[in-house]
Amino acid sequence: GRLMVSNGKDSGEAVYGYFESAFAEGARSGRGSLRVLGDMAWTLDKGFGIDQLIEFELRYNQFLAHQFPVVTLCQYDARRFSGVGILDALKCHDDTFKYPLGRFLS
Image 1 (cartoon, rainbow, N blue to C red):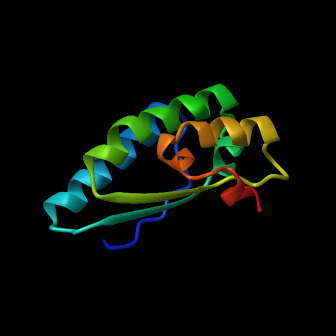
Image 2: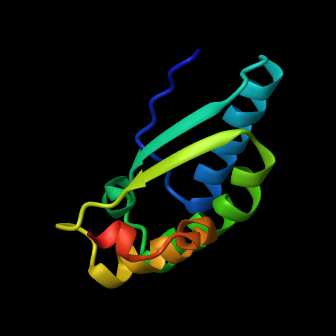
């Protein structure tokens, strides 16, 4: 129960529910912290549009990421996502930009 693997869900709502349930179970089990590593290309494989993905990212960041002791790393393959799509995803995470943008681009 300490490692969970998922191939994604068919909607942003379903993914959000999956994380919410898993995080709540982790908290009930006494886990001090949670880690999520996501290869976001699964969203493309499931037919998500970039708008659906951004909506999920915003909701995750605004609610789950602040409600539970979780550190999340979402990976966006630049060969599969547009530069604009990746930038929009970065903008969903307001804590990312408290650092100078050059720190990420150098």
